[in-house]
Amino acid sequence: MTATAGIPLVNAWNEWDTLREVVVGSADGACFEPTEPGNRPQVRRHKGAQFPTGRKSAEAVARANEELNGLARLLESRAVTVRRPGPHDFSRPLRTPHFDVENQYCAVCPRDVLITLGNEIVEATMSRRARYFEYEPYRHLVYEYWEADPRVGWTVAPKPTMSDAMYRQDFWEWPIEERHRRMHASEFCVGQTEVVFDAADMSRFGRDILVQESMTTNRAGIRWLKRTLEPKGFRVHPVHFPLDYFPSHIDCTFVPLRPGLILANPDRPISQDELSMFTDNGWELIQAPEPVLTNDEMPPYCQSSKWLSMNVLSLSPSTVICEEQEKSLQDLLADQGFEVLTVPFRNVFEYGGSLHCATWDIRRDGTREDYFPSITYEPLV
Ligand code: ABU
Image (cartoon, rainbow, N blue to C red; front, side):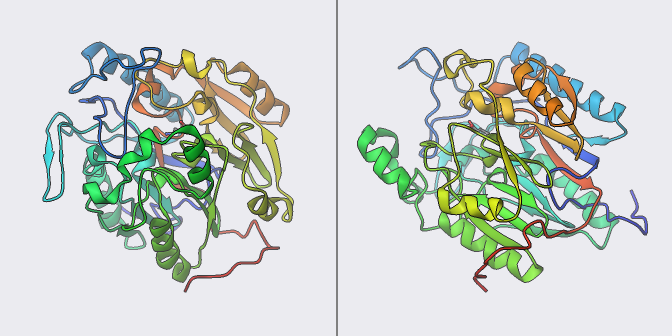
């Protein structure tokens, strides 16, 4: 691979410009996510049942891979270059000076691990032990882009200890009243003593980056992002969705589709004072329709919400890929003037995501634009 004089090999400033190259995840070697301080997986519809450990079955992996490969084929049919993660032994236990974990997870959701911010690749700290080394299946790609084009930047966020002390161990047992009170103070299972963030808590709008404070991203993580990105010309905005009691990753909550248009989760409105950034700058929020599946109907090992329905992938400001069965969402987007492409993807749900989660956009057209000309911003640095 060699760089050409035009657009850098790594170039993505927002979530919607025309997509040219993307990484699609793989379920090869996937394991069940282990119970750990930052995660208490549960079997859906079987309260109290023991959550499995170790490798997922060959059949489950094959079903997910079939759908991931289907997405890859659709993207290639639209002239998008598709790259895939390398092999990784997720069944290997981890032992660091600070924690042990019985197995790792999978490489289905690169979105959680890496983000392209302009011409730079940023590797997130991650927030869960089983995902500590999840950057490894993508490193060969990062090196390839970095070696091939001197304009490509690469920043690795500081790795947290993920020791017991980094977490609020009692978070999972909070009674409902306490949960409500502490959620509104944005207190979740990850404490504030170390820098913690997952890349999927960010959403790109040109020079403005939203970062959701969540179970997977803390205030120190947002401070680190501000301090790192502001000198590079970005404005970093913490955002909150106070009715989401288990927030993790912004891309099932607040999804920009094109300049001026956001698909918003009706169960998780953005906090009132943060809404004005959008309304003052002419952005319209449309509410996602009720998903086809209820939370109770989601696959038994899936730890994500029914709102995976709105985890769409934009191919351009006028073309979007939706899960095949989400007809109401497809109709809504078609009414908004989008060409809507569909693929089956439900067998990927138990790996933590849908179409946006299972991809990492490397190159889109476009440059850094200001979509919020009327804004008051107080930089940290
Ligand atoms: N990884 C995205 C999950 C978000 C949600 O469960 O709503």
